[in-house]
Length: 230
Image (cartoon, rainbow, N blue to C red; front, side, top):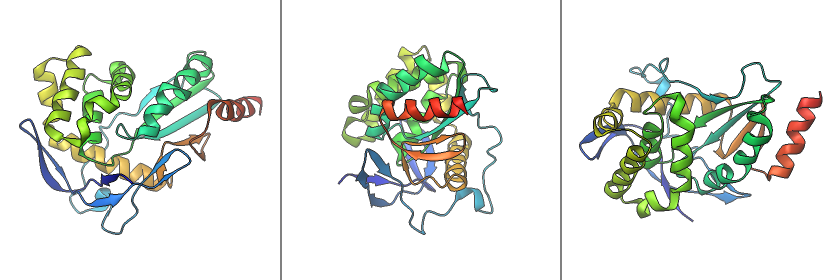
């Protein structure tokens, strides 16, 4: 089983950046194509702390019309291998068949298992909503390469390279990755969302508010078609 670390409040550097998080070892549980989220009592919700960060500035990343009959919320992590497979397969087909045709509104919500996933999210968000999904595709498609076996220095360099390929310059990337307040807010936002929606693994899908675990595109298509026909 693979190790993952849960984020909270210890300082970790990324090429000069200082991000605040707590890391504790735990075990990733693999079942039916999901990565389990730790539920230990030491993972107290940052949002509930006295100095809880303001999450009001965190932008929800969405595709498709707001008034679509079906809304799908995906909880995913950039370091989750099952999430990478989902985005290469199910999401690609879902986008072509339902999102681009205006039938489905898609919402992407981050889950952070480790510092690398947080950094990846900060790079993906660096250019705003317009480029988020394009950069996300690059991060997921190159997941096994940029993670670099968990080496934080190499992984941060690889993420910066992806960012530059997407059109971001050094100053933009430095500003994004060194934004301690944004890092804290993202962690608090993730935890609040996961608690509200009772999310315990990735990828997790909410289809019109009902929770589902990872599934094949054929099964997903059946569910979406049923919701559209209601």
